[in-house]
Length: 288
Image (cartoon, rainbow, N blue to C red; front, side, top):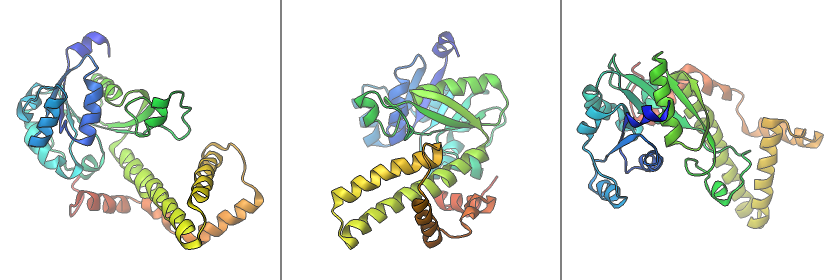
């Protein structure tokens, strides 16, 4: 999308004072889009004003938006979309930041608007950081480059390009945007990165605690060993940088037999995906 096209487009951020609302807003204000900021809570409104940004009520913002960003918690996305989607002009884009509500069928349906979901990948553990700002930006959206995965099934190339332009700005600096289906994005998050990767991270922290507080290894020594070996383990398994030793492979097999259930891959079944998303959204069933 060229600069002139950006100048003619209005992006509205609903929930602009929230954690993600602030993050995307901070980047959007630096763009050539016309940006409207909406926030319901009095404390949040005070925050937006303190940042020198004007507030627009959500109904007005929705009516004017070419792209409506719903930066609100997943559990209220259904209710918020019921309120605002009917107010959108035909052809508008509704952009959500997590796939759960879209996958569950909670978003208010409307045939003449385009639904997009985009989730940041966060800066890679293998990113070669060149500045202190990049080192400090572990989440992304400030200085460290990251990739984004987005879902759009509407088939309109112009709307996809508009959504892509907004996505690249709000999560900047962005290396690339990868387009998938809503279900594929839901498999990525939560299954791949929350059910598995984040769980493994929490397990590593528990293991560190046991090493220090049960076995009695000095914490600095244990932490140094764990952090260094976590990096090399990821490099060896995900990048193939260096093969594990024969002794390490034996220990890895022992760990798998001792810790991992034989049927763990069931988390990739459709029924299990539905189960975890209903728990996350606190709903009784998937509605799609």
